[in-house]
Length: 267
Image (cartoon, rainbow, N blue to C red):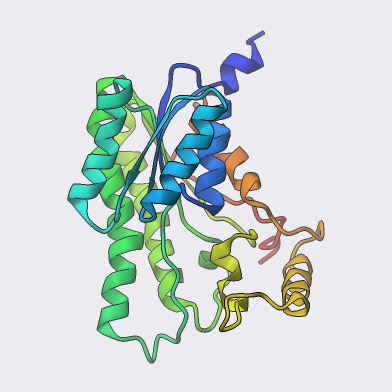
């Protein structure tokens, strides 16, 4: 019988996590570090990324941080390159960073379209492209992209975000076919309602505060979509990432994984 700690553990592994300053990305960085990985934390918010990395180091993990606009190929290459220069290689890439967009497709303008596509589609692709040769050099690895539950439940006024995340899902399917012979697995998350700053943004008032009644109503509406009556936390997604990053998921690739409380059951 195999030792579960070795199967799920990441001792000796190196991971890059984008979007690591907050939310799901921050939780992913923390969980992978707790499992033994050395972690490169990237975020557009460079100070936030360094704050996450500092906490990881204080907990005894190896971690460095870098500011990155994932829509910029050179910056993504530089961030992923830190895995090799600081820790000797790359085993796990978590493409968590992304951006939302609120508004109807009918009213969508070119500027918003280009920016959201650049971040959510190009940014994910750039990360994958930078990671592949480093993983291949080590005999394989695991790429984990972040799609969205929005690909399963269309919502009016959220179309641009949904279509970019659908592209991430298809990118994941295709890339898994293309790089499997080099020992690289590619999977994606499609998170359900998960409480982060990303999801709370539409509840914010002009002064930045959140009305408690509006928040409670929001939570209630999200809970009603789940058969188990739950709303996710960022760590719920991070634990799934740990599975996909570890040897425990060695037979899993090209899949879209849904930690969503059953919100899409029967749909």
